[in-house]
Structures are given as structure tokens and as C-alpha cells.
Amino acid sequence: MGIRLNCRCGRSLHLRDDLAGLAIRCPQCRKILQVPDGWLQGTEADEGVAAPATQGRSRRAASGTAGFASSLGRIFVALGTSLVFLLGYFYVAGVVRNRSGGVSETSGTDSYRPPPVESKYGFNSETAGSVPAVPTGLQPGKIPVPRFSELGRPVMRFPGGQLMYSVQAQSGGSIPGGDMQMFVYLPAELPGPATLPCVLVAPAGTILLTGNGVTDDYHKEALPYVEAGCVVVRYSLDGSVDDMDNPAQLEAGIQAFMKAEGGTVNGRNALEYVLQNLPHVNPRKIFVAGHSSAGTVALCMAAVEPRLAGCIAYAACADPEARLRDGLVNNGPAYALLMQFLAATSPMKHASEIKCPVMVFHAVDDSNVAYSEAQNYVATLKSAGVETHFVTAASGDHYQPMIDEGIPAGIRWLQQQ
Image (cartoon, rainbow, N blue to C red; front, side, top):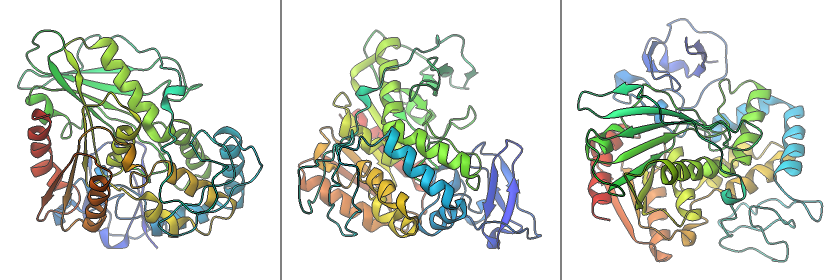
């Protein structure tokens, strides 16, 4: 049983029974919704989709890494056999360049057994046995950079004089990232050319296999940087899904996110836009940041993009394979393919590929992504020789510590880089 709630923005929410009668925030439009006391039959949602604002966990849904092991399993099982085979077919045809015609499953341990294929995710068909890491393999540079709309007139002016603009990629959905959206924030005062730092921020709230859009009314992960004198670009991730119970939507979202190289194409596009169109930004002071699932994307960006000055990961899922393995294991032919993709987008696997400094922020009592996962990842970064700054919060759970302590610490850190 569960509670099914539809927001006026069009997002269909599937909530836990214990949220009955509480206030939650829609993860898409961020409006406060009242969960009805009456129970309607539906699919039980995971804790990342919605959490009661009255219990001090407001916005955890909006920024949490939504949809993890237990609920993912139910979601995929509900899709039925047709999705499993369609997903496998499209992934093999459109993403994996299969030379030998087959793939092998992951070993289920901390090591990874490369499948006997040659793919653009960098798996080596000649390697035998298990290896502790695989090449990053994500290649956003192979995807063309889209055309962008003009900066135009600002769509919002903040009390401090900061401005926000809306920018749209205009190359269409035929190429990954070809119709992504961005919001560009500029400080109230613009100094000379190539002087300002810039922060690229992806949206959180995904299942690590899909993307998400950006809205024009959520500024908590952007405005503090702008008030500190940074340019900020919030960018969408290909593969947004409105209804996770809709097989066609879920399949399309997974396919789009995969084709966008786990969101690194979107991040690369945002970076290219900044370099081409924002002359006030110092090209050597461009950072990437993200919370929860967006922190995972940020860390992948740091692994593939040498032009970044640094990466800030707030409460990030650093090991998506471990997180989702149990929830996906019963999905037949799709299992190995999905795990293969998660390996390609796993920060834990690709720490040695990161060449820029990294700041990791995590709350000790985070109930969404375990603090121990952050500790393990930081140890992995340091073992790989990555310059790492680990900042912790004593309490506050998954979202609020990022707002109260994480971003202020992130601003101080990037100003020192």
C-alpha cells in the first residue's frame, strides 16, 4: 500500500503510508503539498522522493538521490518483461558497441569483471579476470556541442541586485543535450573580463539512472555562490521522468541519461556555454558542484573534464553499484547492462581519473547516503593522490546541512583554490 498524490505541476508522487496527513514538497516544482489522510492504493515510494517537512527534513526529497535499492526493485519489476527486453535491446544497440555479441554480469564484489565487449564506456575486451577499477570511459567530447539561445533579458532580479537568465540549447533532441535548459546567475556587479569564478550545478533528485529538469523558482543551491561573487549555471540532465510507474517514460528517461553519458554531456555543454558566452568568467576558475545524485554527476564530471578547477560533492552517492545492485538483481537481461552503466558512472571506481581538487561534505547522521560511504570514498580519493578536503556536519540528515553548513564551507574552499 501507499499514497498516490498528483501535484499541479504534473508530477505524480507515490508516498509512504507514514506520510499521511503531513506536509511534503514536490520534488519537481518544490511547492508544499498536503498529503491526504485517506489512503489510496499505489506503489510505495522511497525516502528520496518525499519526506515530511514537519520533521525537519524539508527538501530532502527535492535534493535527495531519489529511488534507491528497495523501491528501484519494485519499480523495475512493475515495468514488466517488455521493458526489460526493450531496455536491453536499446542499450545494446544504442549505447554499447558490442563486438563479440555478449556481456557478462558484474561479480557482485568490490572488484569489477569487464564484459567481453568493446564499448564507448571504456571496457577492455582483452582484459581477463577481476580488476579493482575500470577506465572512466565516459566520453562527452564525442557528442557535438549544441547551439545556445542568447542570454537575452533577465527573468529574475534578486533583492541584492543579482540577475538570473534562462538559456536553452537549440539543437533539438536528436543529439544528447541538444535541448537542455540552463539558468545563468550573474552577480550584481561585474568586474573586468576573466575575473569571476563560476560554479556549474546539476539538479538532484534522481534514481542515478535518469536525469532531471531545472525550475526557475529554486535558488538555494545557487544564490549563495552568486552573493559571494560567483557566476552560477544550473543545468538540466537529459532523461527527466515525470511518472516513475510509467514504463515508456522510465525507459525513455534511462535511455536519454545513458546517451548523455550519465549527465556529463550536459555538464560539458554548460561548461562550453560559459567559455563561449560569459567573458567575465575566469576560465581557470570553473568549478562543478552537486548534492546527492547531482554530487555523483559532479564527481563524474571531475573525472572526465580536465578544465575544471575543482569539484564540490555534497552528500553524494559515491558507489551507485552497491546502492542499486540488490534492487536491480531480479531484472533479467537488463541487470548486467544497468550494472555496466553504473560502473561507468561510479565515482568510487574512477577516483584515480580525477585531476582537480575535491571537497566532500557529509552529515554524520545522513539517513539517505551513509556517512561511512563518504568516509570510504575520501579514503579512496586520498589513496589515488587526489587533493581532498573532507568537511562533516554533526547532524541535520541529508539536505539541510548542505544549505546551512555545506555551501558556506564550499564557498570558502573554492575561494582558496
